[in-house]
Image (cartoon, rainbow, N blue to C red; front, side, top):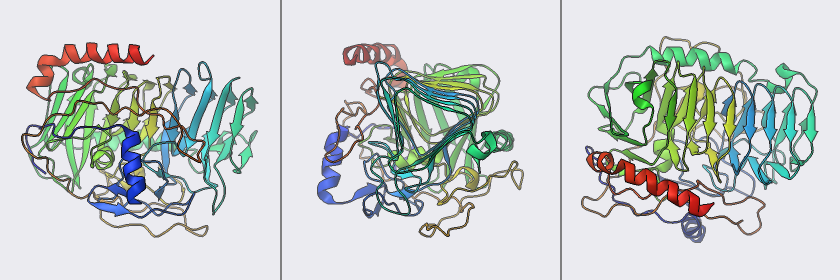
Length: 467
């Protein structure tokens, strides 16, 4: 891939068009590799190098690790749509969409396709679970073939089902106490804290510069343990909307250590990675970029992802509460409360490739409370064996993604946002929901700095039109 200043050279297209194209082809592309279609409701092992898929409908890979963790409570209101993968909540969980509707957990209408095996627990709540009147929480929808059915729910306290809680054949249990309900991830909060501290101690291998709402990360040295490490003050990250990664080695994962206790508010509008815009669904490297990047907000007390765009990369924030209206694409690990209340926004499960602790694991298993070494374990290529009921719990080494393809110089910039139209695919109860939409971006870097204000106004106007 061409490195240096980004050239936005891909025109985004609606997700419905992309899905129709892949359906006709009978495959779903994942960067330079292809993943074969699984049987209905089944998925293969964890993604290998170059296999992290773009956004699609079908399950592709099995991941028993935590996708979204809220150490405190988890609240869904407004028009939030979906949470892909295993959702673990230390406190109470409340689903109260306004004015009602379906919220998918585990398997989603359009996501990474990396999710727990059918029949596995997809929602674990340490406290009480409430589903408000008019809201349906749909767990593991459409997963209809072994090793089980649908997705399970385990609740430490009580279930207040004023609306509807559907497990599609999966288990449903309450009154177990927090430790049993969250097992084997009852100590995941301590894991998040320990990993954040260990990652935060790593020395930078590149530069990070913030200017006019754009943050540019540029590699200037070799990787550390398979990582490119950057450091940025939380006050500089606050207010950012455009993110540019330059000269990143093809085999490296990316760690952004965010320092200081300043609250961070981001309205993601565009992400460039080695010369290509990757936050639009038409990008062949949407999944690869999402799996490579992690932001470690070690001291941040409050995190806001505003707007309706796509945030690319994982979030590690052990001391924060989080307010989300944008869609996330990566792991989301927050020590405090999480509120999800946008318009069609989703959390898509792209495991981080930088350390096995947060990578994809074919089967659920206990996490260490502290890393075995001062830094993360280097990534190693390889694909885990296919999961089965006898697969032991544990972690496989994180895969190293392949190099993304280059962008043709001089091609026109994308004029559409990563929007997803509403509606349901034939034969499915899953809504094809998506991000609320971001404004078109004509350039990144100098152009984004100059036009940042106009882009933000256009984004707000578009969201008002979309209601």
